Image 1 (cartoon, rainbow, N blue to C red):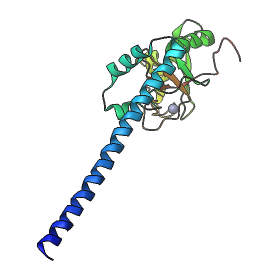
Image 2: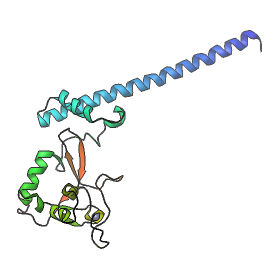
Image 3: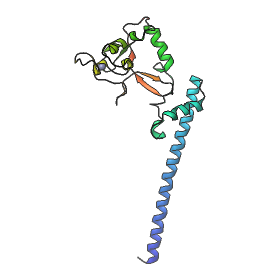
Image 4: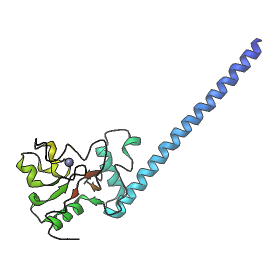
Length: 186
Ligand SMILES: [Zn+2]
């Protein structure tokens, strides 16, 4: 190979490499652009339902973001607020009051894994945080092998049917309300 031929070959390789890099950069650029568009559209959807300005919604999300925005912003964390199984926090609390009354101790939840039916009072009785009643199966706390299991709503696998949107507009999976102990029937 002559010097000229070698030079031509190198130039060609360098050009191809540049082109590949440009395509990669462009893809990255458009992915980020798409994600930003997604965030704005999702925040506007939240504004429509909650009447909270979408810029405030984004500020609240950002105040809780503890990972890259490409990972943080996704349907699992900021789901569309539609369907019977997604509640804003206040609506979910109101639903519990409607079903079980104002005494939180009587609120009941069902473990999605073993179907154990439990009340907030059951958690109080074993000396653990009552808020666990909609997140943990009592089996995690009662040390009894024949009652409940080890399930937690925020585990790797999500089998909960209910999603609650907190005051920062982030989604949490929770156990369904018990059929037992209801004041009203549907
Ligand atoms: Zn269970």
